[in-house]
Image (tube, rainbow, N blue to C red; front, side):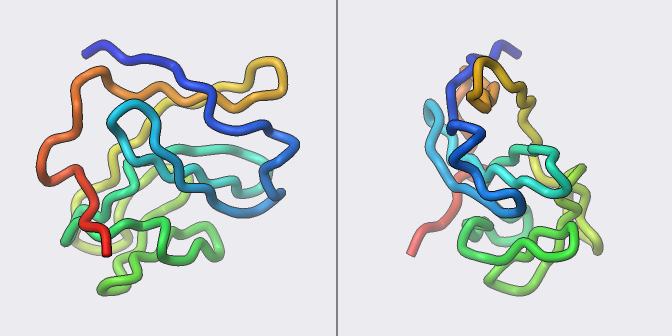
Length: 115
């Protein structure tokens, strides 16, 4: 599957520990920074498609605001029974964090329910 790299955020502007939600191409992306490392995921809980960016990131986990599902912030693996999050490749280039998202649009179940 082909993917396109997008500039997501200036690394200097990103808090040392935190999260950022952004739209890259047709994908809603959640970027997390834990222990200085960046990871990027589809911003959609695999349980009931809630936007994970409206939840919390604590102690290395991404917590879904809807039912409390927890995902490892380094791997996207669910700490429980739900499927893992779709993870996107990241890289740093000239002070910017870049994220590669698929050229194919997200399937219905990969789009977060907003509101």
